[in-house]
Image (spheres, each protein chain N blue to C red):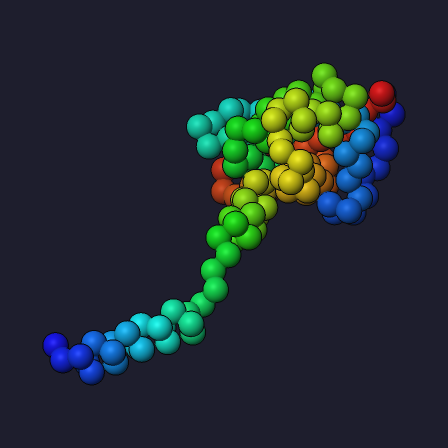
Length: 100
Length: 50
């Protein structure tokens, strides 16, 4: 499956595209949220709440990240915060764009 | 406490209220939440990591 390069920070993240967790990422749920480990980059990411973990785990089931956020119960006024969080995860290759 | 002392105390308390810092907790919480939602760590170079 072809992967498009991910650009920039939060401003470069497209909430309306489909995303998925990278195959090389292990997700370990924790009481505070989750711990992610990328076997390719050897980087760790800490998700600091359960909602962002729910968003992450459901990305593959939704046509867009926006849809995944809505389904996880992210309120509209908090969406920019989650967009930046997903942008951070995209920059560190924890998540990737996928074909629709 | 005399009446004058009570008045002076009231004036002091009023000044404190007027000049005290304006705290906007909602904004502070949003900033904290933004910073803490994802935190990244690299383990490259750590002893014992292959």
